[in-house]
Image (cartoon, rainbow, N blue to C red; front, side, top):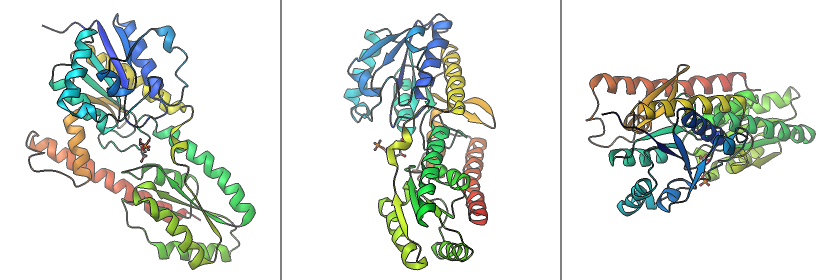
Length: 355
Ligand code: F6P
């Protein structure tokens, strides 16, 4: 018999991302419109373990679509990875009659959602992270806003760089992925973009800079992805100065890029994905993450999403692919190739047109 949902929980977990609040608003309003109560779980999975809940009405969330950060707060919760923590979380669900959960976050959040799903609490994931590092979806909630924030900051840095005829090397967030770096690098006309996905040719960068300086170019922006390690961008700044003679400064906006009001794209993505998550949860789906693929909003099995991520990072463990059909494995490989080709092509464009 189909499960009747009376109350669902919503939480955000992992690094916050602009648009998470818009997703919370969407889930809340979508569920209430379908006759289902909603309870907000405060502070991610640790809120579930510690029974920190807040009932949500449409009125509570009507003004949060433009809120930065996350209205329900967030956490990276190690206790949830233990059997004891998991048992407490399930107890909270039972005690409060929570029939299912929608969890917004990145891969760690989805691992938690899958753990709950297999223990009888239906869960659906929403991809919320500025890094865009979830291979199964083309875009994550928060990515667009973070990139626009980088643009705004770097346009300011360019003003001062231009006044002083300097190069500014900017390290942008993206722990495991260079999406923010490559897209903002192109949008900023950076003279160089360095990221972990594609080998970086320092000598070619120095040569381009010297040529442009000879033609009268005063200022330069170089974008570096955080994934290259903390020392990389600072060392590159020094080397640029030494090898080109161009005065250089290093800048790391770090968490500033995670804040701020979500862009239109992130608000729409969060709203559409949130509604889809509720629709599928109430239809009886579980253990899936909502993804955007080729402009379609689709549900992807969470295990598939996690394994394709591992495949992409060349971190597959023995047995990881056992549960998948040969067709699914081929599809995963094609997706990984698509992502890798994207970085190669985009870096090629950035290096060709950056000046
Ligand atoms: O959420 C992703 C992210 O912002 C990464 O880009 C960054 O490396 C990391 O989180 C920072 O984590 P924390 O907020 O725990 O310092």
